[in-house]
Each structure stands twice: as C-alpha cells, then as structure tokens.
Image (cartoon, rainbow, N blue to C red; front, side):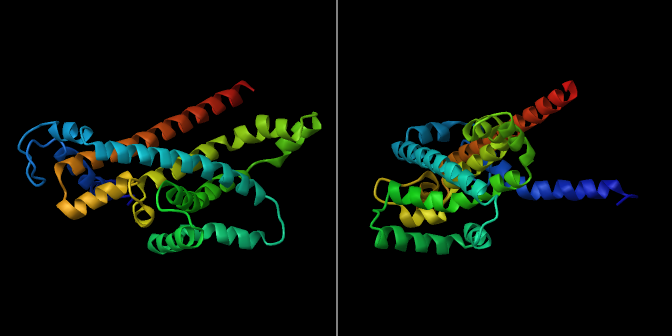
Length: 268
C-alpha cells in the first residue's frame, strides 16, 4: 500500500460506487420521461407532480412524520434518563444493560410478531397509531441509550461537583453544566430515533391498521402489488434526499460546535 497508494484509493472508490450507484440511478430514473427504469429517454418532473397529487401518499407522509416525531421525543427523554441511571453502579446494572441492548440484535421479524402479540392481543391496544407508537419507542429506545450513555460515561464528574461546590442546586447544575455536555449525544440519539421510526417497514407492517399506513409500508405495498412504478421511484428519491439532508445538517452542526469549542478553548 505504501508503494502503491492509488490502490487504496481505487478500493475506496469501488466501495462507494457499489454503495451509491443504485441510489444515484434511482434518482436519475425518477426524472425519466418514460415509465422505463432501464432506459433514460428524456427529462421530466411529471412523476413528482403525480406523486404530490396522490392523497394517499400525503396522508401516509403526515402519519409517518407525526409518528417519527412523537417516537423520537419519547425515546430521547426516556433513553437519556436511562443512560444517566446506568451511569452509577447498582445491583443488577449488568442485567438492565443487557436487556436494553437486546432490541439491537433481535431480528425485526421476531420483534414485530412479539409486539403484535403483546400490544394487540395481550394489552388490548388496537392496531394503528397507538400500537405503532409503542413499538417504535420500544425499538428506538436502545439506540438512544447506547448513544447517550457513551457520552455520559466519558463525562468528567468533577465539573458537576464544582458546580455543586459553587452553590448550584441539582437542577441548576444539570441545566447549565450536564445538559450542555451531553447535548450532542442527545441530539444524535433523537436523530437516530427519528430516522429509525421514519424508515421502519418490517415492524410497522405488523401493527398497521385501517387508515394508519406509514409511508415505508405504503411504498412496500405498492411495489409488491404493481411493481416499481415511476411514482414509487420518485417517492423513494425524496425519502433518501430527506434522510441525507438530516445527516448533512447533523454533521454541519457538529462541526460548528467543535470549531466553536476550539475557539473558546484558545481564548481561555
């Protein structure tokens, strides 16, 4: 590799090509004037116009956004509190840590069947928004706990102790010292929870009721029934674009905070 550095660059380029070439072709095909996905015959935005005229898509998008926002807020609050709770040693902490990590490794099909049996059959929660919200919070919570806990475990407790020594109350110390330190991890956990809820297909397909079809489930159902239509391609392109924009915004904000922290440290 030292003698031929271009080899490593070529391997990286091939990996990126393998990952993103299908997505790039999908975006290009969404502007195709014909319904063919294998041949580009011209440029047109008619599929996007038809997509935004479809009331089923707009209703599914509204439901998905509401579900993702509610799931992200609830998962972030509970997951952040759980991360702080696991910060200190107590009997059974290892068991709780394993239990919170199980949703990360359990197959989604198993989780979907289990949640269908528990929420609907046992708890009596009807299929629809309520069951979907419970399920999305359940599988998003673990990701929030892992992200926030990694930040909490590396935080210097002496800063909190210094705030207490200076007369700050527990709430004031948490609001002015602890929360700003863990804020990037909390935001990252919330973004994870939002994207996981927004993109979920497998678990949501078990708990979707009449009039409560999420956007990914709608896309999967349409593709299964009618094949991959240009409208579905346009919708998939918009979903990928929205996810990429959220990721870019997160990276920009994190870079801005890092530069700001570095500038503050230089001034001090």
